[in-house]
Image 1 (cartoon, rainbow, N blue to C red):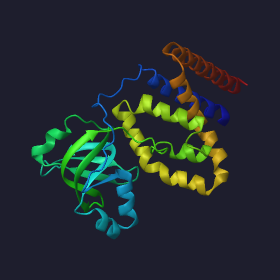
Image 2: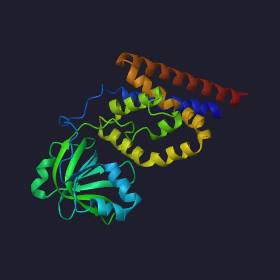
Image 3: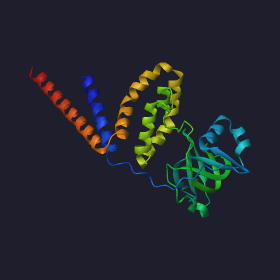
Image 4: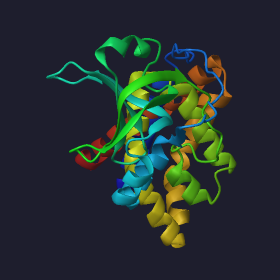
Length: 270
């Protein structure tokens, strides 16, 4: 009975997610046309948001000596675009992939610079580093530019921490499928981007645990199998094939429900 319940739960979960995935062909989020990643000029320090956060996390004093008071060109993925409640000052945050972001503040007169970007864009922001805020967030003040740039292909995009640890390589085909599903179905809508952001923040410690205990890898790979299977279906089939698969799963689910009902009736009447 327990095994049957698990099977039903798995089938229902797959059906629901595939239904979401087949709700329409993925439509790219409107963004500005990416430009090449900027090259640092004299007097400007180029750094990724993650590296800036890591440096401040490792040694705040050393990071202040390196960055505070300097003009930085910080690149990263936009997490939020907002205003401060009291001062109405516009700002955006760049995701570090951890529990902190880089907060980039703009003067109100320069908020038009933010009109052509959206959450999820990979951008570079130029501004003066003022160290950490009271909320322990590295920050830029008086930012003077923000532009969409090409994200670096550095083998670690902050998404597949757990899968990379489980399969042993960022280039593994299973990891590649998950990454493709993210780009095609999650990063194209606000809900999906929110889920990815939460994953960014929660998965690194889990991945580290897997790395530290290799015996966990087979268990994690087994747990990832439904996600890999779903992603394979989503990215490798046509809409008609997806509909056929959903119909088949629905039929299986219906058959299981009937079988359980009949079994329950036999027990009651037996």
